[in-house]
Image (cartoon, rainbow, N blue to C red; front, side, top):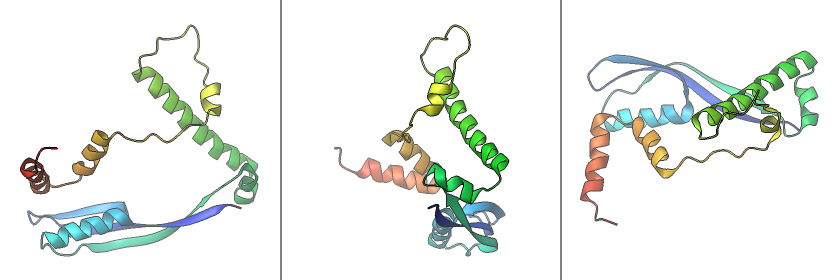
Length: 153
C-alpha cells in the first residue's frame, strides 16, 4: 500500500533588519515558522504570506505499489531511470573525490546501482556548520560568545 504525507510550502515577503523588503519562495513550513519566530524576536514585522499550498506526496513501500501509483509504464520507467541516474551520479562523485585509483576501462556502475545504501549521517562539525549557516551575523556572534563564556569541557 503506498504511503502519503503532506508538506506545506510558502512564498512570503518580509522586512529585514535594515528595513529592506525581501522575498522568499518555495520555503518549507518548518523553515518559514523558524524565520517567523526570528523576526518576532528581533521585533520586526510578521512576514506576509503571498502564496501557501499543502502538497500530498506519494511513496511506494514496495515495487508492487508502483503500477497502482503510475499506471503508464513509460512514465514509471522514466521515474525509475531518473532515480537510478541520481544514485549512479552519487557513486561517480564519491569515486572522483575519493582516494580510489582509476580502473582500467569503463567503471561499471551496476553494482553500485543494486547496492543498498544507508543515508549518510553528517559528522557533528558538518551539522553545526549547516545549522549556523542560517544565522544572522549578530546571532552567530551571540552563539560564539556563549561558547567563550562556557566552562571548558
